[in-house]
Length: 209
Ligand code: 5GP
Picture (cartoon, rainbow, N blue to C red):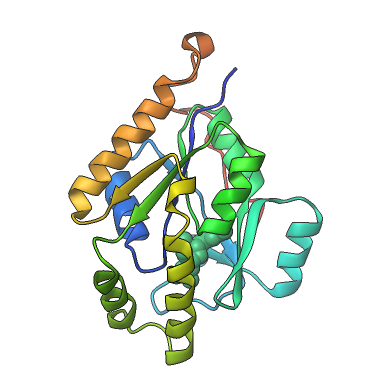
Protein backbone atom coordinates (compact mmCIF):
# COMPACT_ATOMS: atom_id res chain seq x y z
CA UNK A 1 0.00 0.00 0.00
CA UNK A 2 1.35 3.43 -0.92
CA UNK A 3 1.94 5.57 2.16
CA UNK A 4 0.25 8.97 2.50
CA UNK A 5 2.25 11.95 1.21
CA UNK A 6 5.31 13.37 2.92
CA UNK A 7 5.55 17.14 2.47
CA UNK A 8 8.59 19.13 3.59
CA UNK A 9 8.20 22.82 4.38
CA UNK A 10 11.50 24.61 4.45
CA UNK A 11 12.90 28.11 4.12
CA UNK A 12 15.01 30.53 6.12
CA UNK A 13 14.60 30.99 9.85
CA UNK A 14 12.18 33.89 10.38
CA UNK A 15 10.21 33.38 7.16
CA UNK A 16 7.15 32.30 9.15
CA UNK A 17 7.22 28.54 8.54
CA UNK A 18 5.68 27.74 11.93
CA UNK A 19 2.89 30.29 11.54
CA UNK A 20 1.96 29.07 8.07
CA UNK A 21 2.13 25.43 9.11
CA UNK A 22 0.03 26.09 12.24
CA UNK A 23 -2.62 27.79 10.12
CA UNK A 24 -2.62 24.90 7.62
CA UNK A 25 -3.08 22.39 10.48
CA UNK A 26 -5.86 24.46 12.00
CA UNK A 27 -7.70 24.26 8.69
CA UNK A 28 -6.96 20.57 8.14
CA UNK A 29 -6.38 18.73 11.44
CA UNK A 30 -6.06 15.48 9.47
CA UNK A 31 -2.49 16.37 8.57
CA UNK A 32 0.18 15.28 11.05
CA UNK A 33 3.11 17.57 11.88
CA UNK A 34 6.29 15.78 12.89
CA UNK A 35 7.83 16.81 16.23
CA UNK A 36 11.60 17.12 15.91
CA UNK A 37 14.31 16.34 18.40
CA UNK A 38 16.69 19.21 19.15
CA UNK A 39 19.66 19.94 21.38
CA UNK A 40 18.57 23.60 21.60
CA UNK A 41 17.27 24.79 24.97
CA UNK A 42 13.53 25.53 25.15
CA UNK A 43 12.31 29.10 24.60
CA UNK A 44 9.80 30.45 27.09
CA UNK A 45 6.46 28.75 26.50
CA UNK A 46 7.85 25.81 24.55
CA UNK A 47 6.77 22.41 25.83
CA UNK A 48 8.73 19.13 25.56
CA UNK A 49 6.90 16.87 23.12
CA UNK A 50 4.85 19.69 21.61
CA UNK A 51 7.25 22.10 19.87
CA UNK A 52 10.23 19.76 20.15
CA UNK A 53 11.67 16.85 22.02
CA UNK A 54 14.40 18.74 23.89
CA UNK A 55 17.21 16.23 23.84
CA UNK A 56 20.62 15.96 25.52
CA UNK A 57 23.58 15.80 23.14
CA UNK A 58 24.32 12.20 24.18
CA UNK A 59 20.77 11.06 23.46
CA UNK A 60 20.89 12.85 20.11
CA UNK A 61 24.12 10.94 19.27
CA UNK A 62 22.29 7.72 20.15
CA UNK A 63 19.37 8.59 17.87
CA UNK A 64 21.82 9.12 15.01
CA UNK A 65 23.75 5.94 15.78
CA UNK A 66 20.61 3.80 15.87
CA UNK A 67 19.30 5.28 12.59
CA UNK A 68 16.41 6.76 14.54
CA UNK A 69 16.38 9.98 12.53
CA UNK A 70 15.07 10.37 8.99
CA UNK A 71 17.32 13.41 8.64
CA UNK A 72 19.24 15.71 10.92
CA UNK A 73 21.30 18.89 10.64
CA UNK A 74 23.29 21.34 12.67
CA UNK A 75 21.75 24.80 12.55
CA UNK A 76 23.02 27.97 14.25
CA UNK A 77 24.94 25.96 16.85
CA UNK A 78 22.31 23.33 17.68
CA UNK A 79 21.28 19.98 16.21
CA UNK A 80 17.79 19.21 14.94
CA UNK A 81 16.41 15.93 13.59
CA UNK A 82 13.21 14.20 12.48
CA UNK A 83 12.38 10.99 14.38
CA UNK A 84 11.92 8.36 11.67
CA UNK A 85 9.41 5.91 13.18
CA UNK A 86 6.45 8.27 13.78
CA UNK A 87 6.73 9.65 10.23
CA UNK A 88 6.56 6.16 8.79
CA UNK A 89 3.70 5.12 11.11
CA UNK A 90 1.50 8.11 10.31
CA UNK A 91 2.10 7.79 6.57
CA UNK A 92 1.32 4.06 6.71
CA UNK A 93 -1.91 4.88 8.57
CA UNK A 94 -2.96 7.15 5.68
CA UNK A 95 -2.23 10.48 7.33
CA UNK A 96 -0.31 13.08 5.29
CA UNK A 97 2.83 14.13 7.15
CA UNK A 98 4.41 17.61 7.23
CA UNK A 99 8.01 18.27 8.20
CA UNK A 100 9.00 21.81 9.06
CA UNK A 101 12.77 21.77 8.74
CA UNK A 102 15.74 23.74 7.44
CA UNK A 103 17.34 23.32 4.03
CA UNK A 104 20.10 20.76 4.74
CA UNK A 105 17.48 18.44 6.22
CA UNK A 106 15.19 18.94 3.23
CA UNK A 107 18.03 17.81 0.95
CA UNK A 108 18.46 14.63 3.01
CA UNK A 109 14.72 13.90 2.80
CA UNK A 110 14.93 14.32 -0.98
CA UNK A 111 17.52 11.51 -1.04
CA UNK A 112 15.87 9.27 1.55
CA UNK A 113 12.28 9.66 0.28
CA UNK A 114 12.33 10.58 -3.42
CA UNK A 115 8.51 10.81 -3.52
CA UNK A 116 8.47 13.59 -0.88
CA UNK A 117 7.21 17.00 -2.01
CA UNK A 118 9.62 19.80 -1.10
CA UNK A 119 8.08 23.23 -0.55
CA UNK A 120 10.17 26.36 0.01
CA UNK A 121 8.75 29.40 1.80
CA UNK A 122 10.24 32.71 0.71
CA UNK A 123 9.88 36.05 2.48
CA UNK A 124 8.35 38.91 0.45
CA UNK A 125 11.71 40.71 0.84
CA UNK A 126 15.05 40.48 2.65
CA UNK A 127 13.98 43.47 4.76
CA UNK A 128 10.84 41.65 5.91
CA UNK A 129 12.93 38.65 6.93
CA UNK A 130 15.53 40.61 8.91
CA UNK A 131 12.82 42.64 10.62
CA UNK A 132 11.17 39.42 11.73
CA UNK A 133 14.37 37.82 12.98
CA UNK A 134 15.42 40.94 14.87
CA UNK A 135 11.95 41.65 16.23
CA UNK A 136 11.37 38.16 17.61
CA UNK A 137 13.52 39.00 20.63
CA UNK A 138 13.98 35.35 21.56
CA UNK A 139 17.68 35.10 20.67
CA UNK A 140 20.77 37.00 21.79
CA UNK A 141 22.80 39.09 19.30
CA UNK A 142 25.17 36.29 18.37
CA UNK A 143 22.32 33.87 17.68
CA UNK A 144 20.51 36.45 15.51
CA UNK A 145 23.73 37.05 13.54
CA UNK A 146 24.15 33.29 12.97
CA UNK A 147 20.53 33.03 11.83
CA UNK A 148 20.90 35.97 9.42
CA UNK A 149 24.00 34.37 7.90
CA UNK A 150 22.15 31.04 7.61
CA UNK A 151 19.13 32.81 6.06
CA UNK A 152 21.32 34.30 3.32
CA UNK A 153 22.60 30.85 2.42
CA UNK A 154 19.20 29.19 2.72
CA UNK A 155 17.48 31.68 0.39
CA UNK A 156 19.82 30.61 -2.39
CA UNK A 157 18.46 27.04 -2.15
CA UNK A 158 14.94 27.89 -3.39
CA UNK A 159 15.51 26.56 -6.95
CA UNK A 160 16.22 23.07 -5.56
CA UNK A 161 12.63 22.79 -4.31
CA UNK A 162 9.56 21.43 -6.12
CA UNK A 163 7.44 24.44 -5.17
CA UNK A 164 8.15 27.97 -3.92
CA UNK A 165 5.53 29.92 -1.96
CA UNK A 166 6.00 33.58 -1.05
CA UNK A 167 4.77 34.19 2.47
CA UNK A 168 3.24 37.62 1.98
CA UNK A 169 -0.04 36.62 3.62
CA UNK A 170 -0.31 33.76 6.13
CA UNK A 171 -3.86 32.75 5.17
CA UNK A 172 -3.10 32.63 1.46
CA UNK A 173 0.16 30.85 2.02
CA UNK A 174 -1.50 28.21 4.25
CA UNK A 175 -4.21 27.68 1.63
CA UNK A 176 -1.60 27.25 -1.10
CA UNK A 177 0.25 24.74 1.09
CA UNK A 178 -2.95 22.74 1.66
CA UNK A 179 -3.56 22.63 -2.09
CA UNK A 180 -0.07 21.23 -2.56
CA UNK A 181 -0.62 18.58 0.13
CA UNK A 182 -3.90 17.55 -1.51
CA UNK A 183 -2.27 17.41 -4.94
CA UNK A 184 0.60 15.32 -3.53
CA UNK A 185 -2.02 12.83 -2.28
CA UNK A 186 -3.76 12.75 -5.65
CA UNK A 187 -0.51 11.93 -7.38
CA UNK A 188 -0.36 8.55 -5.62
CA UNK A 189 -1.64 5.41 -7.37
CA UNK A 190 -5.45 5.28 -7.43
CA UNK A 191 -5.60 1.76 -5.99
CA UNK A 192 -3.65 2.54 -2.83
CA UNK A 193 -6.83 3.18 -0.85
CA UNK A 194 -4.83 4.89 1.87
CA UNK A 195 -6.28 8.39 1.76
CA UNK A 196 -8.67 7.77 4.64
CA UNK A 197 -7.76 9.15 8.04
CA UNK A 198 -6.37 6.93 10.75
CA UNK A 199 -9.13 6.12 13.21
CA UNK A 200 -8.48 3.19 15.50
CA UNK A 201 -4.70 3.06 15.47
CA UNK A 202 -3.15 6.41 16.30
CA UNK A 203 0.61 6.32 15.95
CA UNK A 204 2.54 7.89 18.77
CA UNK A 205 5.75 9.75 19.38
CA UNK A 206 6.99 7.32 21.98
CA UNK A 207 10.17 6.62 20.05
CA UNK A 208 11.91 9.74 21.34
CA UNK A 209 10.48 10.66 24.72
P1 5GP B 1 14.23 27.04 15.83
O1 5GP B 1 15.44 26.97 16.69
O2 5GP B 1 13.95 28.45 15.36
O3 5GP B 1 13.04 26.38 16.42
O4 5GP B 1 14.59 26.22 14.50
C1 5GP B 1 15.72 26.53 13.74
C2 5GP B 1 15.63 25.89 12.38
O5 5GP B 1 15.66 24.47 12.50
C3 5GP B 1 14.32 26.22 11.66
O6 5GP B 1 14.62 26.53 10.31
C4 5GP B 1 13.53 24.94 11.76
O7 5GP B 1 12.64 24.76 10.68
C5 5GP B 1 14.65 23.92 11.68
N1 5GP B 1 14.26 22.59 12.19
C6 5GP B 1 13.35 22.28 13.14
N2 5GP B 1 13.28 20.96 13.29
C7 5GP B 1 14.14 20.42 12.41
C8 5GP B 1 14.50 19.07 12.08
O8 5GP B 1 14.01 18.09 12.62
N3 5GP B 1 15.45 18.89 11.12
C9 5GP B 1 16.05 19.95 10.48
N4 5GP B 1 16.94 19.66 9.53
N5 5GP B 1 15.72 21.21 10.76
C10 5GP B 1 14.79 21.46 11.71
